[in-house]
Image 1 (cartoon, one colour):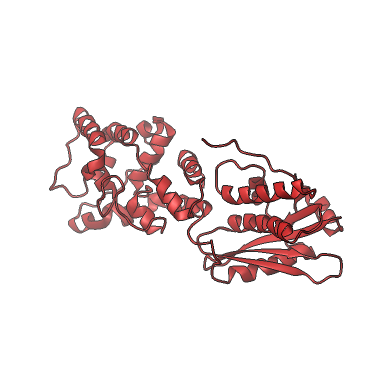
Image 2 (spheres, one colour):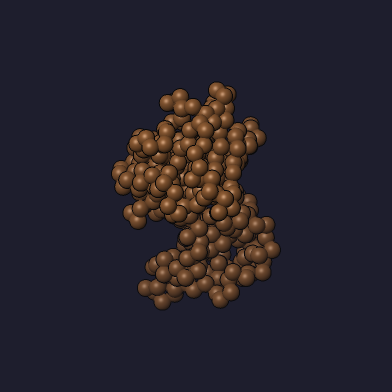
Length: 358
């Protein structure tokens, strides 16, 4: 049983640009920490924290190399969580202020609801709660970036070197934000890449390359299906469904095998026509095809899935298969493997499926 999402145990302030710059330049009682995140062109990310105990004192920096498989969003959250934990470890005097220039990370900190960044938001919430219990209230505040604010520049100078280094302990794997972006980019490119990357393989040499019909995105039957079923139907149709071969290709899974039956490669063709773990849904598919007058696939037919997805009369039967096969449930395990123990992957990935927003 999951606990209800918690609100941030402190104060979150996002002011207008002018007022935010004025306040950023002021000296605050207690301790002010500055955090930032960075991502290089090679995919490495890192977080940085900067601290100046008193005016004119030398700046202190905390560098957190995160390696690949993370987004700037993750690095920004890591910076905040690490700043608060640093304040705890060093017994820094309160109140505690953390300033950063990423409003999306600040918004994520408002709640621990499931979604990308939940594990880091939980870390920040726990550290803020401990600080509050010790009499050191926490304020998270937005500062406009690239405006010459010294603390913000110091945090940036810590984050960039961190992003250039190999990952530190505990940063192996992929974050959900990274996986969601990869999936979203694949969906965006699905139409133009379909013929080249999927049905053309093998069939092209025999002159029977499948081309998706013009206006496939306006499929009336598919569009009327429940959103989740329609989403999965189009994922299978475009060849970018989060199944074994695809997840293995984007490095979100160690193997392309089928989790339902153990077959070495889980492809669209395997799911529809061969998977031993989906016999019941396949019977529904074949009955629906027969009722619609669509010829059933044969062992001698090349790429029967291409024919079915291009045949409007087969759409209802395919949607019935998708709805009954409980497809992609094993993404929960794939997401957990990719994120090495975070517990929020399935809910957010399911939200991505439903909305198409990554």
